[in-house]
Image 1: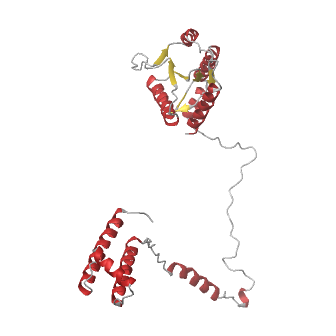
Image 2: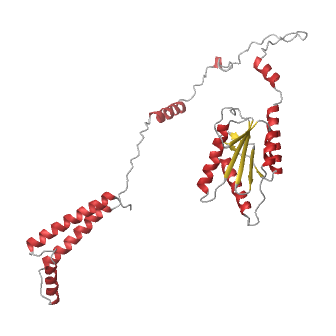
Length: 308
């Protein structure tokens, strides 16, 4: 039973009404004030002295208590919702017509012709009909030539099936970036698809740092990927801060980009030179397995984002 504010107010109103009604009744019939402590002491002294009191006094008291409790029950009792389901009326006309036709078909026996002159001749319905056959061509005749139009779309698709060097180039860049960050002391993590874009590199380092890189992607899309990671980190971590570094190689909007926290490189050689100048610092002596826990946490985040 849920406690509702309207039920509480109704209970208070009912108690006030019963109390006032009881006070009016006892004051009128017995001259007894239920709000007076002196009157209650007088009743208790009469009961202690075993002085007889009118039975109507006790009956009125019991009736007042019963009315109070019963009224409270009616107010706070749980009420069940009755949902009336619609009743579908299906006419029997659709079901009776097939049954009547079936009965009529079974009730009419077939009429047999007993005329002796027509016993040997089958009826017209049972006579085999002669199907005219087309004349067969002579063996030396050539089959007709089929004029099948050639689809220009099929011709173009056959001519356009050439290998795509761009996909191979992207895979080559991914492998090269993994080698660059591995040589710089970072730990490579599997890539994930975020907002319809697959990252080219995800790497982690000491001091809770993280690198996210893409190739040929707008800086606005990379910023959206970083914000996705930051949102998950803020929802799952309380005090630990993870610094995310983003970079793009050959960004289409490099000339008009407004993001200062996203590094932009024209070629992968520029990325190699930058990472050689900024390697990953070694693990501190008092790490105590914190980097392993951080690595497992990043793996769990990547797995979660891959399922979303």
